[in-house]
Image 1: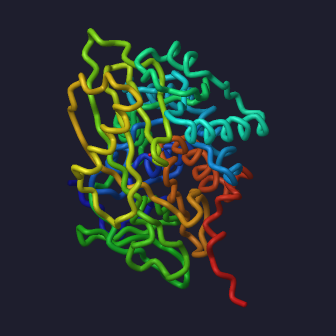
Image 2: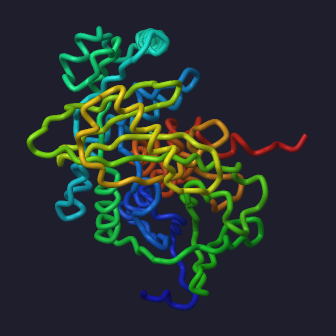
Length: 387
Ligand code: GLY
């Protein structure tokens, strides 16, 4: 590993080289800023496990309209972002696929829940079409005969998180951002301002601005003054990867989601034959063990939805941690500590929100103004104002 020169200084130091940190670094470097990213494995993190559904409409929750606006803004820029990234990364494809999503119901309770979601979509003027069970099976013939109806959302797509991460690593390096493969062990704070970080190599680096993009570990960075960031919950998701042999393709043509026994289940079919099935939702701290129970639950529910999956080779199991903020929305922009900028807390939406996060945070770094779209997500919304 190349060592930093003594007294190393950069304009922007990004702590955390997952896809969010890399997107911020890439966009900031494109704007002419000097950028250093510290992460032991740039491109690692939750994107290595995520299924990569880009589903602001089918994943919409009541009361999360500002998040919907942010998600839709990111979804709308995905095609151009993916094309630009592929070009910037020397032709590395991101697996972005405009395939649409259907969300289906297996019993009458699930159907009622989807009916309410559909009514909510209509009130918000979103493009979402109601399907009978027969119409759903006409679109996806592998669905179980018992599917009771659902929704078709033609604008909810997918990307491959692993390829996205690999492309971002290359694009960052080609844009001049330095990726330093080590861990940040402490935030440097002088005169109530973030001024850099100490690193596991024993080095330290000073910076005009520090971007904290360390996912579910962001608030644990030693040296971070109390109250600047809320605690980020690690929310475990177990995921399976199956392979659809050539002879069975197309097995599914679009993303398929369902609520099964109250849990979110989705199947994401990639063009290369990979079929990702996710995901459990478990709040058990920083544990990424794949459990028999998790795998059983996913296979049981996916089999109920698409019985033919039992014929497919199971090639990989994995677990990742979603970074959940107290209100499940991301933290974007300047914090209460001058010099410290947040790009974290993306919970279920890290892959979806990567393009818009890169753009908004880089805009702030380059101009000092946080764009309007990011304002509902200011990290200071959690900062206690003294009485
Ligand atoms: N966005 C999918 C998940 O969090 O499981």
